[in-house]
Image 1: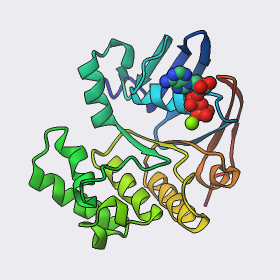
Image 2: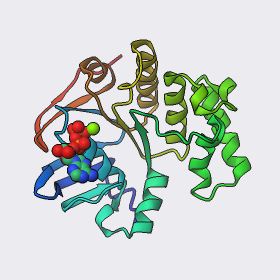
Image 3: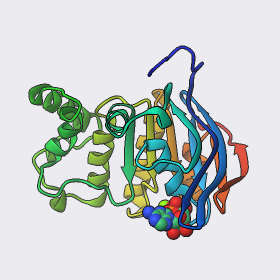
Image 4: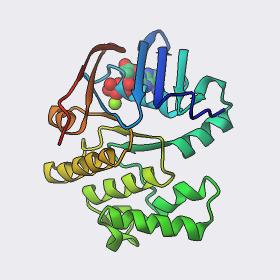
Length: 235
Ligand code: ADP
Ligand code: MG
């Protein structure tokens, strides 16, 4: 169920979310609210639960307890197929290692995201091409991922994530596998997207990325939010 007005611009709300793997708690009671247009950076040591946090918000994984509401959808009330639909329609996700399909050219990697929601192939390819153009890689539309540089691959992944105009863009260490120059370019891209209104939640190990891209910084330790602070707004 979607009730866009009653959410009062809150895109993400977590109430006391726990996620256990066996005896260990990857998330040990996280409560969090993210408003439309915010850019939130999550930092913390390896293994503290950052990816798990993104995965439960994306509906890739279900929490052991607690509630998660995204864009008016209570994820706990969705069936598996409802959750898959939610993921495709509401969430864009970018990963450290791109997660592109190796046997599809760039354009099809991007277009597929819309085709999976029922958009006609011709219409999906048209929008995919527009997005590749906006991200400056339209000339690589027929290239297979293996022939693209890391920065180009991540741009294709960003285009794919934006295909369905997601309520929330999640990025899990999006510059982690890139050299510093490509990392800067992807970082600039994320800043631009946020300035155009895209709500963004990203995990990063890079304090500079957090400072530049985020309006709020959340520090996670042992599955809990240990500190949270506002950052000076980037220009
Ligand atoms: P981070 O992204 O901060 O490095 P993760 O969220 O990936 O941390 O992992 C948090 C904890 O949960 C770690 O101890 C990790 O080993 C464990 N974990 C994550 N995913 C799984 C899984 N699918 N099965 C078992 N344990 C997991
Ligand atoms: Mg991780």
